[in-house]
Image 1 (cartoon, rainbow over the protein chains, first blue to last red):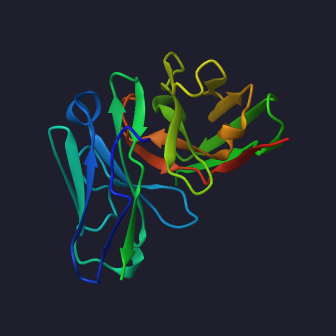
Image 2 (tube, rainbow over the protein chains, first blue to last red; image 1 turned 180 degrees about the vertical axis):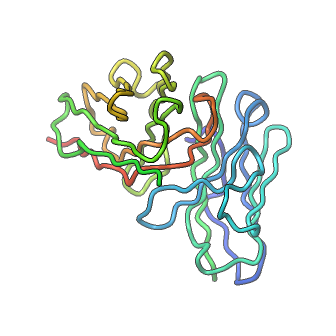
Length: 110
Length: 122
């Protein structure tokens, strides 16, 4: 049971927009930055969103994120086949003194 | 370019020990915090431990507290994870990762190694 809650899967057709939610608590999402990671099959995770909504260099602007209170979300617009991957949210948890991850959301492009 | 290369994984019996290493290059190692993150086969990411840039602060997941020790040698640009009293549930790929910001107590990890597989089995 992950501390941060994500839907197990979302799907969409090419060009559509999909959204992944991430629900947490005051001790993690509300008080700290949220990060999003993309993990392609067989690869290490890659930082997709930095500090709630910032995109690291090289990340397409099709990826956007937001945070409100104890929840955060990642949106992928103009969905492409190469976006098929597992996506994880993460944040520092002040009560646990550690990083907490969501359980991961598998994005499928139909 | 930034590189993180883990080593030391393998098959080990329950109750035994293993030490993982993460050799780094391409950045000023002694100015960044570092983390270990695990991923059991077919499962999600699980945070394991973190260490500040100078080693003065360490943090552990409850599941490994008292059994695992994170450390670093800034003269060798290398991160370590000493794993004692290993259990079947510790079986996973272990990734080392570099903190993206200035504080180790954040979830932002901008560079990851390729991972090393630890299998705990009799």
